[in-house]
Length: 479
Image (cartoon, rainbow, N blue to C red):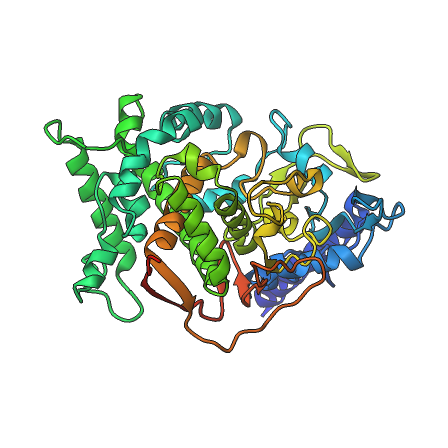
């Protein structure tokens, strides 16, 4: 009985001490002067942040809070100026955990993500993306190691080398679901070709409705692809990631992890952007026809330089990437030694500061009516020229900024330019469901374009639409 009583007292003391330390830390920290996202955010990120992340709402709710909450230390500071000299007032800092701040400020974003900023990736967060205990470019947190890996991958992804991959994309242009699989491992999943034959994809054919064994089969497929790729007698028609990395002296297991980590982001983001672009185009047959004429007048090109210099195509793709905002992950960084002052607030070293690029792509001052798809944000009314807009371009951080700019941004652009061009050249695209919300907005209507409303969605690491993006395609009539 005595032992039980002592044990209970010790447990009670531990609980009391833990609660006392938590409360003291929450209120004694310099961060206590910054508004909380919700009750309890200063005590534990489980109370507010985790619940929002679990529901797919954190990147949807935080921008609203930034707009309604302000800094409790200094007056709200302007996020930026718009063309009319109107000051945009947002609360740039919000506390979402005992040691974690959310920020919504393009100036802070530039400070945190610029080259040699001193803000390193949060190991706690990025460690979750490590494949098979071998960090890849996205999950590497050491800046020197990251720079070294980036130089190696630049042999494939740099703009000067991306043209070497045009043949690969053309080879699979009708099978765009297989782009990244073929590139990363030197062989294709053949998802679309299997579907066209009424067959299941070999990779998932034995899975049940919930794909219970998909992770195991995925590892088996990637391992077999890796083994085949090591065969010195096996020649690949196109350069692929595994060959480049192994040739650069990277251990084969590390190269395999890099390829696996490359596969997910490369398929989800580009395919989501393409789906959104085609959906928006389906409601705009006049724009489609004029884009077709633009392509025809240039002989239906497939090279990067020509495609990106077709204004209607460029505007469509740029707006599609912005509008879809496929990658919505927060990008947490650790405040460097000595701390930093942000918006009049001292933020101590070791604090996690985080923001999502998608917020800036939806900024209502940089992009009026941001939830409407409209390519005329990027081109003039004639559709023959691109336009300049300093604020618009400053907020366009679809691929982030600085040393951690997405290395595959050129690859993604080329995929989208080619895919959209090929679809428009070969098909007339129309909506599958005629019951569409006709979005009308002042200043966003053009005779050639009906603005399209962003579909409802949830946002985890990637955006997930909660309503279908259904289109119909018929062979284009050449008149």
